[in-house]
Length: 248
Image 1 (tube, one colour):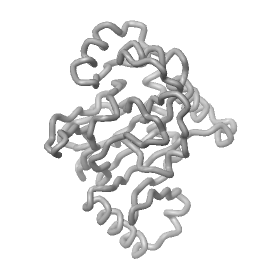
Image 2 (cartoon, rainbow, N blue to C red):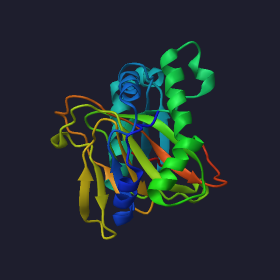
Image 3 (tube, one colour):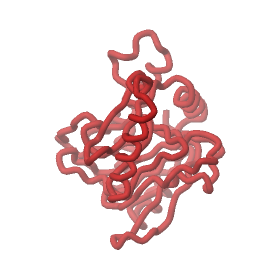
Image 4 (spheres, rainbow, N blue to C red):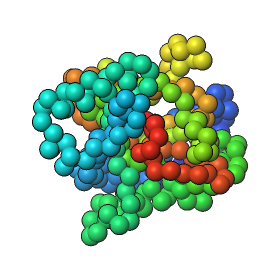
């Protein structure tokens, strides 16, 4: 699946500067194109958010049963959590074997997820970062639409043993004015720089970096799509991603 023309040496040199690197054209073009189509059309996304300090998951069916007043109350609680510096609101999906059935799209999405956890991908990441001992990867597919966001945080969660965060961007023609940037911050909370989503580009960074996904504006013309997660150290205790604050 990896683009055979990637220069590991150049990527490793860039990573050493600040323990982060943007890897353009990560996957073979045909893989990236198919992945984009699946993420755009075929994923049954759930709504993920923080409400009163707890991570919640809401299926489309459950959302459909809520009346407008209940939705407004929920949205206010989400915004209150975000205003206190702990929150997110976006759509996500973790593909699992029992849910695939005869869906070729979901089977392909699982194949990509398994590739990210494979020895081949872990060896590639080890060469880029200079860090060995990776034992797997976790991830989920995400979709951000207008009004959605992820507040400032680190990806360090003790029991998960996360070593590197990643975001495989799958959006075409994203404009930086639409928001949805992967924004990095200093220890004091000042903005450093932001990376605009680029199609088939992998944002890779050490989990010590403070970062956020900026608010997606009402005038964004398309959803911000990605496959995002973490490369893990040995013997991680990995809970289901929906039980803890997640990233990207």
